[in-house]
Image (cartoon, rainbow, N blue to C red; front, side, top):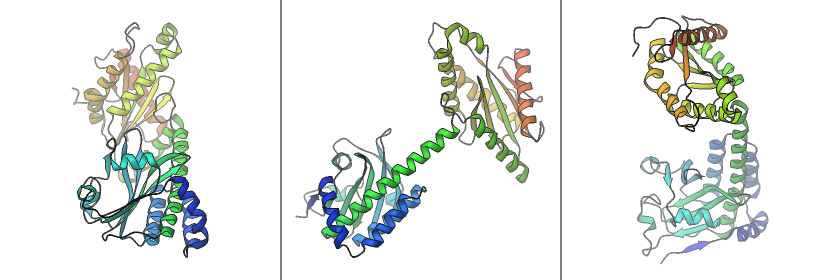
Length: 361
C-alpha cells in the first residue's frame, strides 16, 4: 500500500533536539550548515546543502526548488542524480490544491512512498518516473516558505527518523542561507538602481560605461550611447506638479526596461534624462533600434498618462565609439549635441545622430 507521512514544523523542531545528540554525522552536518549560512553565492550554497542531504539520507537523487510568489512558480536551483529529460523544464506553475501547493502551505516535512492508489509517481509533472520514495522538506524562514528540498530514491523505503530530522536541520539552514542571499541581492540592487525609474543610477552607469570602453578597446568593437530627454519637462512639472512629473519618469523607465534589448544597459542620468549603452552596436543600428521600437514604446507610455494633462514627448541623441570619442566624457557630449540638434531642427522622429547615416527609416 505504501505510506504517506508528514511532520508538522513544531514536530520537526522538537525532533531536532534529539538529533543533535543522536546523529553520528552531527558535526559534519552542522559544519555544512554554518558554511552555507555565511556564503552569498546562493546556487553554490544550495548545491552543498543538497549533496549533504543526499549523503545523510542515503538517497540517489535530489533537488532544491525555490518559490517565486510573483509568478507562483517553483524553479530548480540545484539538482543531482536526475536525468536531463526531467530538468529541461526547471520551472513549473503551482496549481491550486496540488501536492506542491499543499507542501508550500503546510510547511511540514512530507514522506511519500510508492503506492498503486496514487497517480503521483506516474505523473511527469510531479516526479521523475524512476522515483519510488520521495522526501519533501519545505524551506521555511520566519514563517515564510522559500522553497522545497527534495531527496528521492528508486526503491520503496522509509528513512530513519534521525535522518529525516537531519534533513529538517539542513533545510532550516538552507532557508537562512536563501534569506541572507536574497537580502544581500536586494541591498546590492538598490545600491545601483534609481528608485523612481527602476533603471541603473548615474554612479553605476559611469562604472558600466568605463567597463564597456575598456571592453570595446580590448576587442576592437564598436558600441553606441543614447541620451533621452523629456521635452519641456520643467513646464510639465510646473503645470501639473512634481508627482505628475515623477509618474512620467516612472512610465519612461518602465518603457525602456521592456523595449530595449537584453544586452542594452539603461540608466537615469539625472533629472529627466536617461542614458543607454548599446553594446556592439553601430550608429546606424542604434538608430534603427530607437526608430523602430524604443521610441514608440516611450511614446505609448507617455500617452498612457492621465488624459487631462497636455501631451509630452522625448528627444533622443545617439553617438558611437570610437568615431565620436574614446573617452566617456566625449561620448556623452557627442550624444548630447546630437540630441540638441534634433530639438533645434525639429527632426520628425526627434532622434538625432552624431553623424549622418544612410539607414534612416
